[in-house]
Length: 195
Image (cartoon, rainbow, N blue to C red; front, side, top):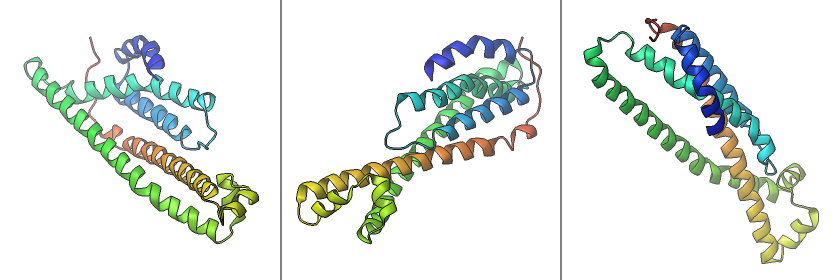
């Protein structure tokens, strides 16, 4: 993500000086939402290769989610007020980020046990699809009836699957919130392009 952001930053600065900030903001948030959404279908075996392109897409969009919105927020102010307004803008952006992280953490840590409990109940009811989902073989399920080691293995499989499902839901929630932000971009006032 960082490498993609670094590589696209010069182009983002050049384009930001020549294009409508609303259009760039819209494009930046749309591409960022796409990158978030592409991370929402992970499995327990998802590894670096499957994570690569969503991170590149998000990294490529970050500068378009920062520079044009800053111009939209501050571009109409007289030069004497920009420093104070910029400080307030950055404070609100950081506060929004902190609140967002808190909401996502609360969601993941609150929803994970709920999903684990549901998986356990379905497994106890003999649901073969749930057993296949967590990779619990019939032999392992039989051993879990009497052996603590097998029960611990199944517990780990359930916890892993619940974390995967919860994290996927969090990625999708972030993608939807980012996409919803696109609805307010056309309402922003256009300002002169950067010098």
